[in-house]
Image (cartoon, rainbow, N blue to C red; front, side):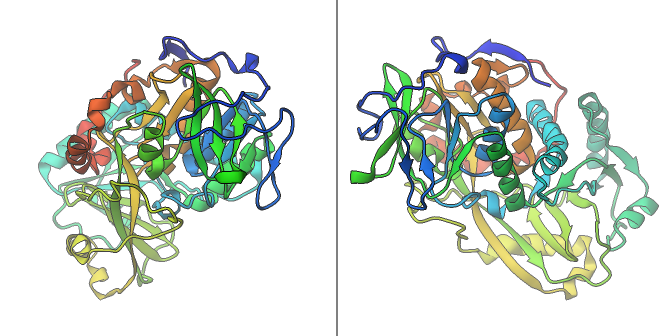
Length: 467
């Protein structure tokens, strides 16, 4: 699916095969200099697990993206991979994801990454023996107007070139697939049989286990404080503070820090145009008459997104204008935390979903959930080697759909890191497309607020490219 393409750095770090195993000498870093330790020896974490003194690649962040990258690096023969997570795996944004593996994206590169994930998750279960909860119920897309029906018809023809099945269905089939739907106002409907859903936490744990099977070291409760930079190149990663400060020498680092990415990258002088934003959904009580295994339901006209799980429905918005959060920095102790929910956020969703599924007027809400997601200035991912520092890779700005693209991103990033070349077809997602000016806070606040939710914009879905 991906092949080695253009170099993205004028002076790339050396290939992994020739990376030194020696510990880097003490040097000033983006944060602060710290003891490097002795070559060939390991430090012990508070939990007693060894921290290597050197590594081929250090992945910063133990969410679904970081763990996927670590696994795919081992698949390419890199056994000296270390993943560092500040608290617990999946505790930032992964845990509260809806876990949808949607295939239609506004950028064909994003679609290809989602397709790869759709293939990777069953392989992940077979490799680890762990269930991720992945299944393919398909997606039912409602067209509430003639204009929307025509748009979806055009989308179906375009997406066929990317290998995505989507076809029109009649009202009888709509009722067969979703018996509780109100269909009297529908101008048409379409079905995508291959779209899926997964359990986010089970998925991140499976990625982590696969990485460890491949020889990677996965360390939780290890907060990275900075990246050691020497002569414009990555030389190591610092963790711990005070007398416990240590350095893992490395020449490749991958920042997969989610909502922490912007503030962490700034320590190295890198300005990333991403911000945490609030995203919300609610979960109903058990719904009478619901059929287990219902397809995912999308109504782009009404901006609602529904999935069934255990007889309950999870309902979110596709074009909610989310609010930026924690622009001055994520709270230090953030771990599996929810944000305060605003009733005004849920009222429009409730009104729309009751119109589409009338029985919900008599069903209570089990929970509302608002959590942060990392959204980029254009709602596209930021991937690849940053042009300002050799060996400093980023994988962030997932904009709410990271779980659904995790396998593809892990696979592509691993290739990028090992070969030093951007895989074909990913130019539109290259972090190098942005400059520091794009990350200026005033501009970024406006762009992120407008971009959030546009990742679900089917009108922007285009033909595949090879850039």
